[in-house]
Image (cartoon, rainbow, N blue to C red; front, side, top):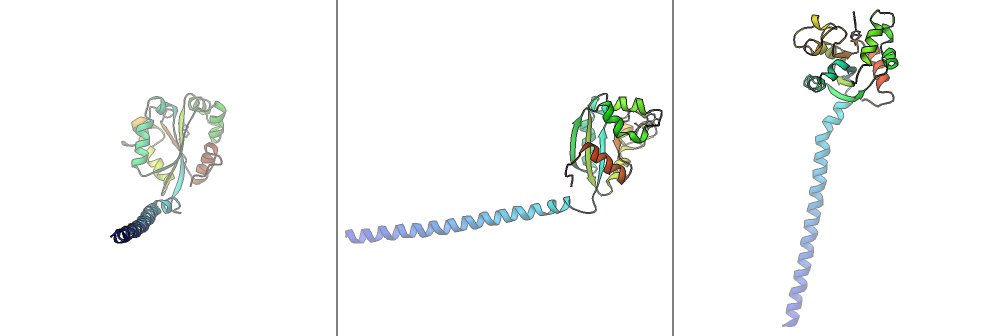
Length: 190
Ligand code: CMP
């Protein structure tokens, strides 16, 4: 009688162990499949960041727009237009920073006033990525003078004058390279 009971007990323990082994194996298989599925789901995004048809441009939300609390609405418009924000910083420029940035306008009569304005309060500097980013961002900003900008453009909506015109954008690939390097030196943007 005791021997029979003992045998049954041993069998039950052995069965439990076998069952536990199966459950453990199935669980680890499940985990492996799950992590593979997550990796596969992430793949399109990883690939998208390295797409060669993407272009980078440089943008500024100027002191007038930051002061008027238009940063949020402008960033919303940037994202709605399909740009990927690759870098973003809030900066207080010195007059020297602004003079270096706008050095190409050094001989213009508005240079002193422009650089004083650009260092008058915080700005938001951004690296934006999209196909044809330079042209697309300039189209979204509209004409330099808000009075001449098309309805629906950022400068029309948020700018007040040719100087207080809410946003800046690079006008060519060489300018974009210089301007991105000026504000994001040594930062991997892609
Ligand atoms: P931005 O796109 O930042 O490039 C140079 C800036 O100079 C421009 O926007 C204007 O804010 C400013 N600017 C251009 N023309 C004039 C002007 N005639 N008077 C004052 N500011 C100007």
